[in-house]
Each structure stands twice: as structure tokens, then as C-alpha cells.
Length: 214
Ligand SMILES: O=C(O)CCC(=O)C(=O)O
Image (tube, rainbow, N blue to C red):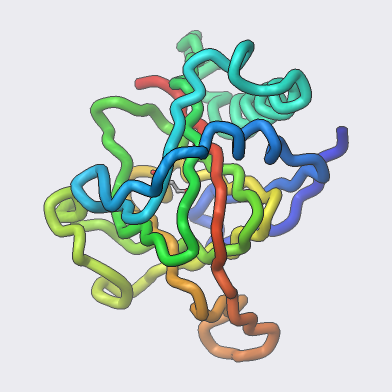
């Protein structure tokens, strides 16, 4: 299995990379999504979605998917959790979440709970491309879910093609909220230029989220 770096995104102060793998564990994950879409959850951060917690990977996903997930966790450890390892802190993982977001679904700005999860929030994006927007968070995110785009300035967009992996760590994990932009949003490599700007048609999207424990 070979990994390739698709994009190094944002400014140097971020620690965000995208990785891609040719095989994706779609067939396995879709199996878990034969339920109706739920209207909202996480205090309405997410709307029109289904989700599955992969509590027992050995019985819930294929051997190929497990190998892929292990590889993701290995990469996350090597690239993003090395300082914890050097301090002798054991790395443990929360069960992965698989999320199925309807094409009209929304994932609004939020910072993942610092009470329950650790230094990494990482997502494998499947099926549909999307844009993830990171906005500096002033701490109001958990109570102000209507907060959207250009309120604070200094936002960063990540283009998430299918089969890419994003990693939120450091400031991207704790000091910025993240959200998915609706279909039709435009991804630009630079604010100053429309060169290489692409309009992203976000359709039905699947993702698998990896988080380390506190
Ligand atoms: O589906 C995604 O990639 C984002 C999920 C997310 O924001 C989260 O689990 O906190």
C-alpha cells in the first residue's frame, strides 16, 4: 500500500497534511448506514447525517479496512504524536466514528470536545469532495452554533478530495473551529488570485474520524 502526500495546506503555523490511499473501505462502511438520516445531533452541529461508532473493528470492518485504519493510526502517531511518545505517554485511540452526511446535510462550526478527546482529530474523506473551513475560535463555538464564515478573519480552507486524510492538531485542533462548506463553495489556493479556483460540488459524503484519547 502506498501513501502519497496530496497537499500541504495552510500556513506554516499549521500542522495539516493530506494523505491519500487508492483503496477505500467503502463497501464495509456503507453496510452500517442502512438507517434513516437523523435531523440533528451534537447540539445541532450536524444535520441530515447517519453515524456509526466502530466499537469492534475486528467484527465490524473488513481485514483490508482494518489494515488501512492501522496504517492511518501509525501515520498519525509518527507524524503528530511523537512528542507525547517521547514523554512516555501511551497513545490510545477512541473508537473511530463513521459519518454519512446527506448531500443537503450540514456540519457547522465547532471545536471537538476537549473533555473527551485528545490532541488529534483526523478524518478520512470518502465518496464526495468537500471544503473544510477552519476559523479562529474565541471559545463561543460550543454555545453559538450559528457562527459561520467570515466573522473573525484569518480562516483557512482545506480541500478534501475523496480518499484524502486531514489532520487537525495543535492550533488547528484547539484554537480553530471546523465546518464543512455547502455545495457550490469555491476553493482557492490563495486569497489574492482566482487562478486554480475550483467550485466544489459536495454530494453524499462519508468520513471516518480518528481521535486519540485524552
Ligand atoms: O466528517 C468530517 O470529516 C468532520 C467530522 C467532525 O467534524 C467531527 O467529528 O468533529
